[in-house]
Image 1 (cartoon, helix red, strand yellow):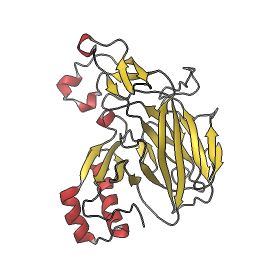
Image 2 (image 1 turned 180 degrees about the horizontal axis):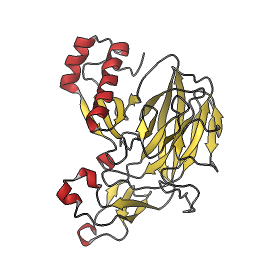
Image 3 (image 1 turned 135 degrees about the vertical axis):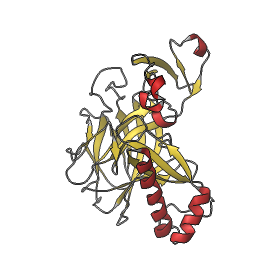
Length: 308
């Protein structure tokens, strides 16, 4: 098992079958640098184009269609002392009358203090002059190349992952992606120092990052949508679609199938268990596809193992 240092020169605004930038083996760890959502690096230099330029792709030896790529998020460290957010709220998350009154879109800068583990607005309105929030780093956009030769914009998401903006993609979480092409071709970027549910302002506290990720493979484990285990041990499945109810359906069906294939349930017991224990999280409701996460806490009547 090898640790690779990956500081790319080329960044992508689509997830697809781009030439591999790094080749690794299952079990390897990658410490990779990523740009912010507008393409600025750790020194503030512009090195990529919006939206959400991605580092990658990373080829994983032995990955084949029908496998699942395992990505364990070891560490996420903001690599700049400042980040930025967009505001106001997105028009689609408020009533039409309120949407008509929203001001023109602009940005605000935030100070990122790694020593105290906090962020604060640099030029806040008076009501927020004392605001300080904890750093809660997460990955906004991550995933693998989709099937069929597609190259899908980093502005959106689908079965392959992509721009999901879920707060659960944080250190300690493990995510599995359905492998659709040889090598899987993994991408990541769009790091956030923190973010509220839904990314309802269109951004988190956007910042370049150093991401430490450990990779593995589950051979012949044909999953349909991203799934994983949160940092506190809950199972989760992800659906990406619009409208929101379709994303919820994808996430719910993926969990229903997982409980049957890997956790000892039949359709009846899985249904009874899920109807009383499921929690739903809203990932992204700003971008073309929305994200809903179906989550089942550890100990809720299911087997504790994440897979087979």
